Length: 326
Image (cartoon, rainbow, N blue to C red; front, side, top):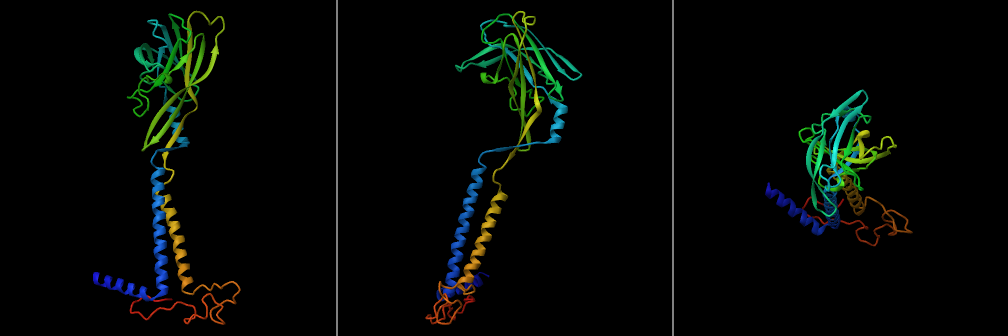
């Protein structure tokens, strides 16, 4: 088998030495092959560069959202004072869940939480945690949790701050599963008013698993009248924004199939160019010089001049190989 291949290659090389048309064909094939391989390398590099980072595309899953409406659990809420200057700054905390034909009373649990400051230091605060079991479920954005806070001392920079997180046993794939020390994850509850907060929940589908992230946003601030404004007191509500959550799916900007399609299209065009070039140099396409009468022969006005002893068409030598001009 190897001897036959070597004989084939030897005959081909012998033909190339003597056949001008075959030399042109070989040259065109080599050039276009190198060009095609270069294009493949460029597209392959583009594929890897586009997918070096993870990309997410927002989608809408009606079935998934209807399912979430039936089991949208409220997150765990932590309520802390804004300063550690006064021990036991929060005197009492009363929280309840409300919704259409729904009422739930919560028992806040005391918890010590470290919170950072803008100077990068951290302080330990005496806080309260509500809904740690995450067993309060709202089926739409009409459900909310309301908390009333009474303080022992009044300070100027606000009385309390809150953050939300997930219980790992309930939401094992939630991104935030404990109170965050970063001060920018906390929102201030101002004195003598009701501050509304809403959850902007996002679901990220990554490697076949949904990961949940809830960002706490400010809503309205409702000032109290003189009857409500009795002593150091404030309140807040927490609910979900309309639509419950946004869903984002992992995706690729440039896939392997896209790359192969691009390279395949280029390969087809290069093949067509190769055929045209073969036909041209073999005399199958009659392309006249400007001002000539067209055709081969006749006063030498064809593309290949009649003064050429071969009539203008490349001729092959009588080599022993199987390759000759067309």
